[in-house]
Image (cartoon, rainbow, N blue to C red; front, side, top):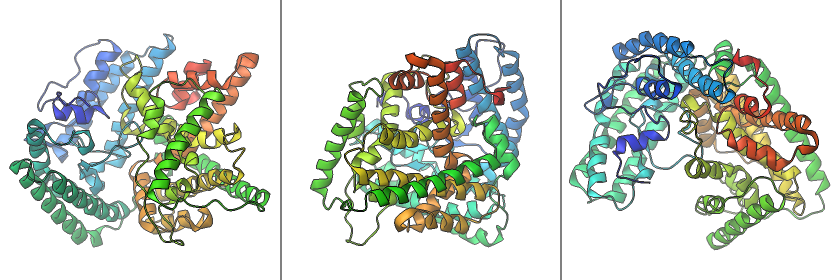
Length: 544
């Protein structure tokens, strides 16, 4: 990454593009310009003002933002391009969805008052999706964007930014007046992790800059003290954390542009869970005379198998003409292999490692994520609205849905024809996604507590491969913080499958898998209903 840009702008560009304005900048509506101008100004307005390097999420600041929001909505409505080019209408709906997202945050989610994890700022590694998973506070610090060893400029900048942590957490003690018990309890773990991340970073850069060393120590001490305060307040937090069924449905249809209600998603997730389990049992019966897949046993074998898997998968995509192949795709996949984690013979590792260590190719299908991220970097969309990730994780069903969908699609396309036992892994992953999706839905419907959600996901994951309660709690915490994320893996997959079927019928003999995926990618990482509109000309009724 080019670190010649001001760091605040660089770290914020991943999610908000134009939202990291200078404190007290002019962020009000400025007339009826084109949609791109409105988008730039909207992203500035969506971010809070910074006071002495700290974003202001106080009661007065948030009330003022909420009062001004209808003016922005009215300005967008006055620019409705209905009847104009579909591409322009799609951009308009993306901006509308973002405005609805901020509206929902003020009316319902209110992360600055209900969600202690909202005040986490330290992120040591890159996510595999277009932006951070879940709500993120403005002013977050992506440590992974800084080249090592740190330059003098970067060290000074980080000293200032990390140094603002104590003041932010003092503000958080005032702002956090909510009564969401599960969110509060999960926030304790988030700040334990932030302290550990600060310790690790402090060791990595120790001695580079004295101000930075002091800032890291102060931030860790503030994080520890904040966690203690959360523990002290926890007994008083007794309320539900889910947004409720009706709010969940509104959010899906008006923010994430997913056409399914809470009730419909429960039905879909139950169906996918049953389909995955039954398909797995039939696959196991078919393969009962074949030897079990053996786990990778050591780091050297792991590195070799991962590199062979990338070669195998990229060759399959090209030979089967799944989609256009670019030179940057292979290195994008090779860059995310990770490190080998040793284990005792009977020990269950992280769920996804249990899959990866049996056949790395299976997990590589999901790692289409990294091809997508490389595509956004190497071949950004021409629209300024689509060239950056949408706010509020609006991209989740498109991004996670594609990554999950291609697991099964590539299996059906023949990727594992010579490895029948690897097909079992695909069904196991689908079952795990469906189980945790249902848990997240029941959390938001206030039918499950966090521990009930964790138990459900663990019970319904095949072969006992999800015994790690902390892993499940982390996933459910994300899904509770971000309505729709837990189900996005499968709601997105289902929508993409429907779109593939519809496009095939529409094109008839002109349909090819490659044409479908190339058109789908060309639309950008946007909700599937919008990609469908661009590809087929069919406008979904939730856009009315």
